Image 1 (spheres, rainbow, N blue to C red):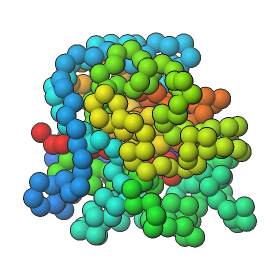
Image 2 (cartoon, rainbow, N blue to C red):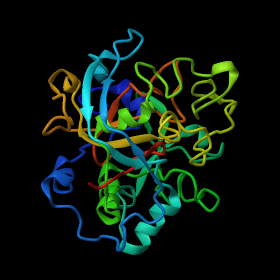
Image 3 (cartoon, one colour):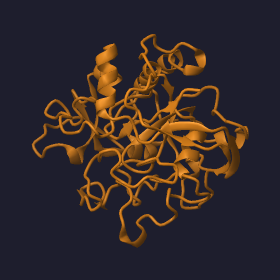
Image 4 (spheres, helix red, strand yellow):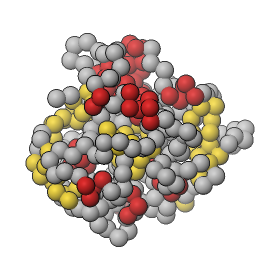
Length: 330
C-alpha cells in the first residue's frame, strides 16, 4: 500500500497507512476555501468545551535544514513567515468533544463508512485473528470495525478515554467538526508557529534535547520499535490531553501523542514557493499535511516527533494515531 504523495512508504509507515484509491473529490467539496462546508453547525459561540489559547502574530522562521531530517518531506528550506494573531486549541479534540459533535449532527465518520481502519499491531490482543497488514509496515493492521468509538476494534471502547485525543478521524471528519463548531483547521504555518511556543530554531517546543535532565516531555515510542514499547514516558498508545507540560503559548502535546491534520494540501516543494505573508499551501494536491508525530514515532525509523517535521496522508485516510486541533474562526 503506497504512502501518501506518490510512494512515500516510509512516511506511511510512520504516520498511518493511506487508503487505496483515496478520493480528492470529497475533500474538495468540504474545503473551507470553497465555501461548501457541511450545513450542520453548533449554536452559541460554536466551540462547546474547546479550550483555545491566544498566539501572537509576528515573523518566525519555519522549517529546518537539519541533515538528520527528511528532505523528501520538504522540511526546508528555512524561511521567514509572517502571521497575524490567532487562537488555537490548547490540545487536540478529545473523544468527549467529538462525541458531542456526533450526537448533535449524526455524523458518520470515514472509518465507519468504510467499515475498517488501521490499528497498531502492538495494541491488539495476542490472540487477535490475522488480518491484512501493510506490506511496507506490517505493524499496521487493517481491523474491521475499528473507528473513533472502538479504537482497537469491536472488542474495545473509549469508556475511560473521554479525555484522550479522538483518533481514526479523516481530514474530512475533521473539517466536518470545524464546520459544526464554528472553527477551522490551522494552516501548516499557523500550526508550526503555535507549536514552537515562541522559541526559534529548535526541534522541540522546549529546545533541542528530547528528554532534558531525563524528563519525558512527550508521548513517543520507548524501547525497541515495533515490538517492545516499554512505556517509560508513562504511556503505551495515546495519553490524555494535557498530560505533559504546555509550551510557551499554552499548547499541550504538539509533539508526540497523535498526528494532527492541517488545512493545507501537501507538496514537498511547498516551502520553496510559499508566500511570506500567511501562506496557505498549494492550491491543489492529493494529500493533506499532518504535523507533530505520534506515540508511534521512534528515532530508529521516524524522527518526526518535532515541531519542524511534516508529513501527509490522503484526506480519507484514518488510523489509530491521527487526530486534530482547531483554530478559532476569524
